[in-house]
Image 1 (cartoon, rainbow, N blue to C red):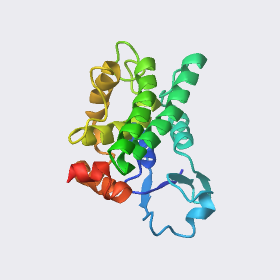
Image 2 (image 1 turned 90 degrees about the vertical axis):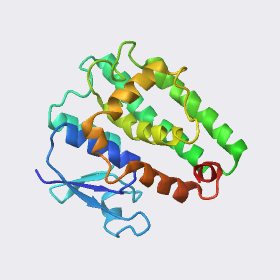
Image 3 (image 1 turned 180 degrees about the vertical axis):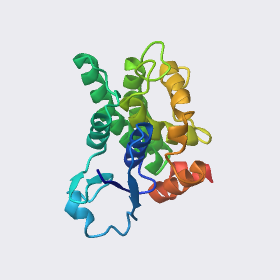
Length: 222
């Protein structure tokens, strides 16, 4: 089976699919495109012209990061979702929720001023509360001992939160000990560290400038 992953270099939703594919040892090739100059053919395999897209044998495409991750897990019999239907449903819900958290984080870095920053941060904090609430009591990953699709889905956000935390406090480690414990474990994994190309903090700085130029976070980062 020929698998081609189409992505933007800095897209967190594409990054989560890279983590899953690499963790499962699935062979694929990357096609990186410029979000400012999207090729016409992207609309033929992605209805909104978004990434990631997994093109299969050149003629079929899966265009959603959650669907790609589940396909990869099924294809490799990876066991990255719980066999118990209730727990499996909870994990799927948290994978979807991770996207909501990621978008809330995007609003933080786009905040135009301090008031907008605090409003966006309050929304992100409220959303991360559910990650903390549903995380496994003992860990070390979010759902327990083993790495799951939930961890892969949250990894790009965790990486961005850690980078921003060096300049602006965007999460309270004391209030979210289970999440932070899992964050530390996940970000230390080689498959997560390799999921981005180049020096991440510098790339993240460019992402902030692109999303929130002249805004609260941009000016704080200098």
